[in-house]
Length: 174
Image (cartoon, one colour):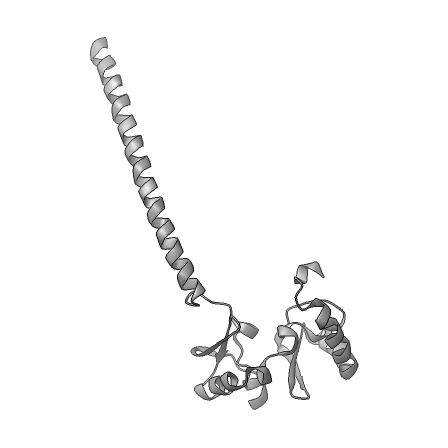
């Protein structure tokens, strides 16, 4: 009986080694395939297919000028500008933006106008805004906008000076 188990142990060890080697070869083949697929995904991403960065939290930038309140855009009307996807409520707004994006883009890349004036980058709230001399300014919240409103023109001058220093810096580094 012992000799029967002894042979079985050897057979089991050989069989286990075969499974391990087969699995290793299969994984290696799968890794090669994944690398090929990964490069295809990278190529697609480079073509903008996988780009999903949405500007101004999906608000229609043209609607700031045409409505009492800004409206959220939708996926049916989009424009990609400098790697950011902007959404619009209709084809007319989409075309207006496409023809003159700089007219509609918020100041300071959508960062809080008062924050930029004091040398910081805080994401602006699309519901807390003001158009001054044709330019859209966002602020962090209503309290901050109240502070900004006390000296709008002075804060814009400060922000313009600061923006040249901080525009290319990571917000966390400020």
